[in-house]
Length: 415
Image (cartoon, rainbow, N blue to C red; front, top):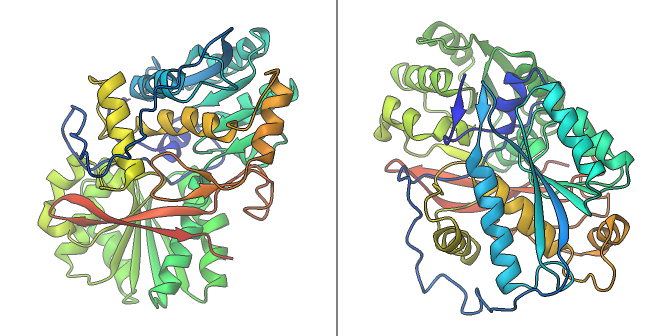
């Protein structure tokens, strides 16, 4: 399963890498074009590029990206992280007024390369590490945090990332099914069926995290596994519709997404469909037909297509600093990771080292999430019960209209 420059998600990465914890959130991008979107000058803040250049000795920040592997390679994550770094150095004074120097390690989503990259960050004595997305956080996070180095990521795919001291996760992407439960409750749903790719990482997460959340919301919940690569999921989908659910969840790679969504329409289901971004990828839209996806609810950690100022800023930064990198895929994860760190450390002055960076992150309050449609994060350990490293408790819900994702709104985790 080669994933390159397409829309993917940490939970797909976790499945491919046999990780223990699934993360269901993905980056949001509905434009199928491979070029950066044109940014509306009306949406872009007037002070978006203030020209406050960083000076002095550079601050070394590690960047670990899943790149070059046989199964998974997402160079666009790194390219977006590099764009965010250039933007911060030229306009935001870098970190503590000093320019950021990225120390890049390309890990190939295998245990050996993941361990090597984590050890390299320790050997290089970086002040913090940004990880774009990975299914191997359980290997890397303990090595990095044990060395006293802050581990930062926009999305988490492992328990070590969500519960370790000195680990910081900007968004609630590791708890998508909990957010879906809260959304279903607000919409008055009484029953929900989840059609999930038949992987222990995916179905296990739904059973361990999603099921309790839906139960707490007073909603009947059932998980039906779909074999990987199934071209026709009609029998499984039909069995789930016997209970006439108010809502359905679809988790999977593009083939599973396409077959389940086609079957739902063929069988005439009127249930509200909820999904992470993987099931709204362009190949899925083309395979199912845009008209058959009208009203699809997509849960994401980012908004990259609307006129929201943060969304417009993302496109403008990418257009200026990485014009050949698609904004329609998962690149926003790298952008969020780096710019989130810059914003979380905006109050840092004086010496820059792992301790001072970690202290600044912990002290920052209501940091604006890059490309987050107004979502903020606070890394005080109290945002998500049981996940002390998760700094945000909201995700973005977008609605599919005419094959495009529109109308972003925010939904919080269930209690």
